[in-house]
Length: 136
Image 1 (cartoon, rainbow, N blue to C red):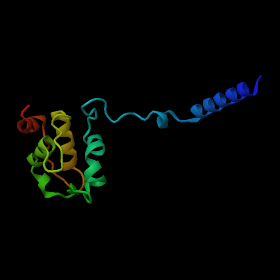
Image 2 (cartoon, rainbow, N blue to C red):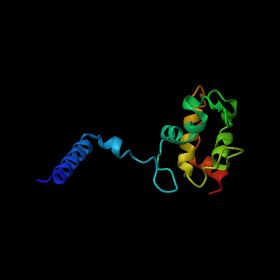
Image 3 (tube, helix red, strand yellow):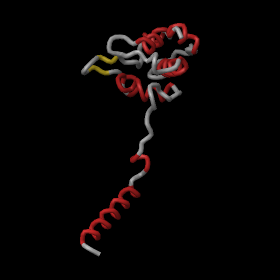
């Protein structure tokens, strides 16, 4: 066997060992969502995947390149219409999610925010509540 062929076989063998040793989850992490809409259905998953990017873990908010209001203990979420309106229409730096989330998903994430992060509002938001604002 020539030195070139020996080197080629060695390189391929090392590559095969490296690929086999790499966990599948690290090599191919699952996508957050496919296409133009979000696939997540629970309020917690939607918050963690979308809202937390700006409003931070625990809904604490942030100030830096922009102002991202805290959702934690925020009296504005007492009125269910306010967070529904914000998710559906956006305002200022917050984008509208009307084209990316279903009314059911919006209800789920709004209910999650209104019952977590020191928010204890027991009047659940329904899909019909969201439809009145999204006009779908």
